[in-house]
Amino acid sequence: MKNTLKYSLVVGLTLLGASSCNRDLLTPIPQTAVSDASAFSTTTRVQTQLLSLYGGLKDGNFYGGRYVIYGDIRGEEFINELSNLVTGSDVWGLNATNSATAVVNTWYYAYLAINRCNIFIDGMAAGGTTVVGADASAKYIAEAKLIRALSYYSLLQYYARPYADGNGSKPGVPLRLNGIKGVGQSNLARSTVAEVYAQILKDLNDAETGLPATYTAASDNTTRAHKNTAIALKTRVYLSMQNYASVITEANKIVSATAPFKASTGVANQLQPDITTVFTTYANSESIFSMPMTSTTGDFPGTQNQLAYYYSPNVANGGIGNGEYSLNPKGIIAEPTWTAADKRRSFIKQSGTGATVKNWLVKYKTASPYTDWVPVIRYSEVLLNLAEAKVRSANTVDDQAVALLNAVRNRSDAATTFTAANFATSADLANAILLERRIEFLGEGLRNNDLMRLLQTIPAKGTVPAKAATETNYIWPISASELALNTLATDN
Image 1 (tube, rainbow, N blue to C red):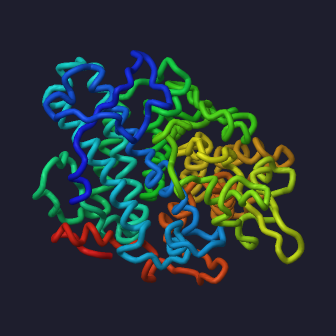
Image 2 (image 1 turned 135 degrees about the horizontal axis):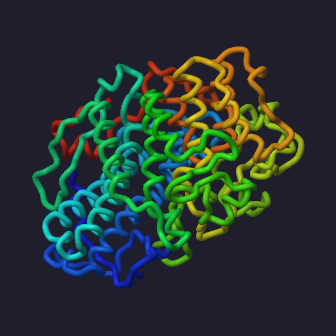
């Protein structure tokens, strides 16, 4: 890919501590460049190369903002207010084209992150391992593989048919596993969805083996990959594949059999007592992996990429954002079982009166330059992944699944407790878990994934009609830039 070829290995000037990776070091913008020959010549340079991989992942055009936003606005929970193509009105309208900003940029930045990982892995094999030693090298490569796996998983959610459609036999994305440093390497056919998922799982399994169990600094346990990060992401990946037995196997590694649910190995991941603290005290035991932001230039998402910019109302309406997307009055906020006493209702702000009333998501509260940390995966997701897998694997009203659902609901709504008697069938319990996911992860980018993996129709919203799984634009077309440069690529 031509754009990817522009990027060479980089190394920043900031020195790294031996035991900690502070969040302001995970910056996507390098301060100086070095040649390939010296990029892996010292321990500091290798470490900085590693941190640049996180910088690529957390770019505002990728997991630092827009990827997450698109995952929500494709669903039914939001109403577009400004009809701005730059901020995803076509994504919301389910009519994005090959040349759309979202389609081209998400593809580009995801593959940029992947190529950085590939170049790093190649560089370690070529000499970096000798510089840092075998033990450190194994950990660093494991981090690179986890980032690569997450990037490939992210691409599949938008550009490929869900695994359930043909058991992974449909076209996925080009599977690039070697670093591109020069021209003439663009042509590569799309691998199947199953082949890409197989590579994702191989990378995550390798990552689980090579990653440290914990880090000394609490912030590193949220901002850098550890063993539980790989395990947690595998529960998401297997759920997307409808491989429920494997979701259970992985989740059982970090979820105790009974409440209070907690990881017994590695980082002591567990729910925070108060959901609101998850989005104010970012380095916490529930946030398994997050993209950290600071006010340092280049270390926040950038113009029109920020979560609060999209979801919070403007200043005139009591917010800190641009009022791009209000909450759909017929969406999840209208759900009667989501009670007024639920603490997650505190993430909703109302503006206007009478016919002008609008509701906004204010889960992200930091004003410009919008330094809220971006959640990648939380422990509450692992609990609900396990709950759903338990139900769907046995087609029963599973007692542990009910307990896991209660753990998430009771944390925010102590007055609501489910029992097995509340669910006449396993389908009723599965639907309750899906409903809980809509409440719990509102604004965290998971709604698209949940609709896709089950081949569910994207519900109607505002002026946009429902979109069935068989219709055009249920998934995105392939980036026009890729099609122009890669003669072996086919469109959706």
